[in-house]
Amino acid sequence: MNHNYFVYITTNPAKNVLYTGITNNLEQRLIEHYLNRGNIGTFAGEFYCYGLVYYERYTEVKFAIKREKQIKSWRRDKKEKLIALENPEFCFLNDEIMTWPPTEEAMSR
Image (cartoon, rainbow, N blue to C red; front, side, top):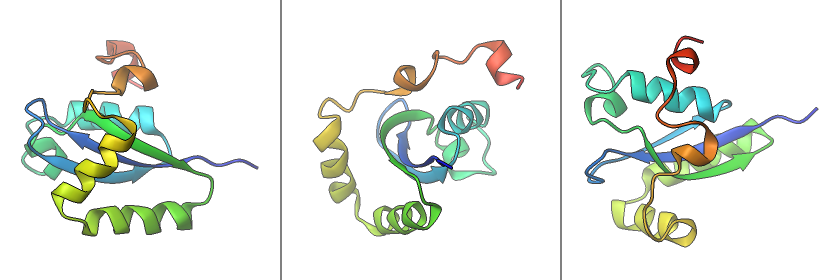
């Protein structure tokens, strides 16, 4: 059985905050971050971190968790270098994963 786990980095529209997370459903997680924008109860929500700039896919959760912890421990400059390897323009990749911005239908799932 194939499983998908994603380690991802999002940023805010000004691209001055980075958030690293893990999920087994990247599309749904991006929607959750988008719906939480402005919510001071969550880091990603408080800082509007819903713009996907980097992700990696894993088939085993233990490797994804290990990688997420590794990336979270890095300083910002090292995270930016990782992002630049795959996304040198620091473009938002949300529309590669799904229709962006999310439709009302997608947000109500």
